[in-house]
Length: 412
Image (tube, rainbow, N blue to C red; front, side, top):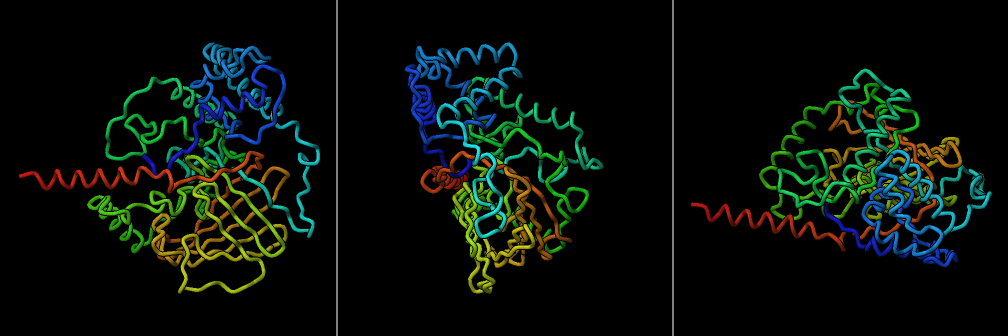
């Protein structure tokens, strides 16, 4: 099980939301400030499947009586139709609860009062497009429209299939992330929110350079470090918490970077902006990066940072954030303290922020590499991810290893 926990009772939360949105059958909407990514395709489908009785009960005799039963009945008959219905109902919930967004919000100006591109807001970086191009698409840089549509439908169908699967007790395997059938080995798929859409360009990888869509080869020293690290993890998986990853220890989010790396859940970035500073807040482990724009010098080697030391400047309408001085214990993708990161944020539309980053570490890779991720504006709020407070897994990991150590010591 991944380190970290989910502190909410989602069943009670959804029922509360429905009662607030629908007036519990009275027809009197009661605006609530709560959402839990209800517009997320996989999450909504999972909620409908698991909370049908609560949905019916919460709606009572109101104008959406029997919502859960009706949707799931249609779902059995025609899945694709229901997926569309679920999307429409999600939108309806948002409209009833919060009211239609004012025109000024829908067409918000993309420049600040001090005449710089306005990057403020919450940005969703979910995508099913992989970081590296799959081997079976080695010579194909872009998907066709049909291929992209089929890929997206496969993800939706998989979410449905896993949500319909009967509950069962998991069995121990050689690792927790994936079961033998390829399904999640930690949380149920219900808790994951990877998204259901490929990037708009239909590129087969997020990596745009090198042209083959692959991370460059490791240098000899990089390969040696990787082999040594793998051997250590195999022989000493949990001598102490120091043997675990920074994400297991709740120091850094596994998708929060920097740079951002789509995957799992909590895939949101909130940006705050002033003339002198930009603040980048990721939902995963609520990492905060304060980026000065005033030209001040970097901190220097004596003060390494888990997320590096960032400095920003504008190049036309693009915010460029240059980060170095990373803590050597971070070990992001086996990199070293020589890692430098250049991120570029460009507002390309009212609801789209193009995020591009270039990674350079001559001690790890034979050449720099660049990835591009479209960030989509979202109006849903971010919540604190209480990773340390819910980190029951660390006790289990260390306790399990101690049990294995004692068992091994007791053998003749």
